[in-house]
Length: 426
Image 1 (tube, helix red, strand yellow):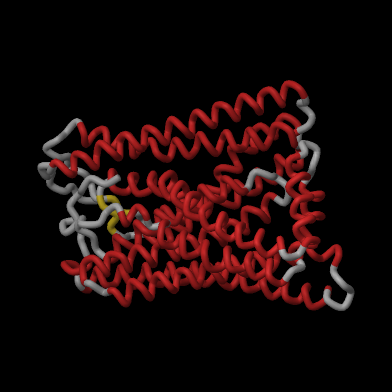
Image 2: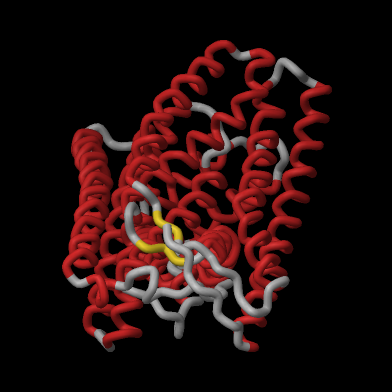
């Protein structure tokens, strides 16, 4: 890693640094506060029923997740604060991820999974260690996928890299939640309009709403009420439309938020690819930590989320690479093609997941002649998910190799650390 010459900051750069610092501090404060409250809830549950891990383990796991998300944003706080103290600029070192990091992280993952599985079998007080191993089991595979994409590529200053990660952990999920919430509201309104024409379906929906408000309703009872609605081809089509079209369109536009915030900064396509991978990895990390609270089938759950992380990292890296191509070379068609490709891949992944979920939900009340067909479709969808995940990893490795070769062949055009002076970034 080479030292780059400090540059005198412009007023906008100082503003960006201040915003990055304030936003990072706010996010750390929120995540740690939520983590503390969840830890207190877990402590109360543990004191009341120490033998019932189902009561205190989920909130303890969520508390560990909140604390870890805050820890990941602490470097952004440090580097932005350090930049604020040096208005004439800081001689940052341009970061680069050596290939040995990928090897070290990949070799650690099996030991974490073995340790977590052993603790689940031992039970008792040892379960208190499970949240820590759970965080490691989620973080390390995601980091490994991101390292596969960005190894030996220029990343820029530490402030830039950690700012991109912090934005993907905080701003991206917030924007995705807002836009997807608006989409679900519109689709939900359309669904209600359709169900109003079918009294039986509307009655089922009202029963489901009443059941969800009852404190003693479990997941199986809710699914039992949901099954009749999911038999409707219209409802199935709406579900597929939301998760295979609208959700991918929103997420693939918002996910590379860290790259979007670097508009106007000196970037190479390889840096855009690497920073896009960081953005996708950060979002995948938040999504996995939010959805993997239950410890049942823990290893299988972590394996499934690894595939999701591969898709998120690959599509976001592709969009980050295309955005830089758009900004520096005006390649609109390439940017549009990359975005549509990312939406297509993400939509196909979500569609296959929906098919498997529908088969699981509808199977208990499925007609005998339809069950074998649905089983074959679900099995094919599972193979499709594996193929997409492996394909994403191969694509990441291939594009990384190609970008490194381009840098070696045309170092001045590819964006060396000298061509990418450190800048301030939120």
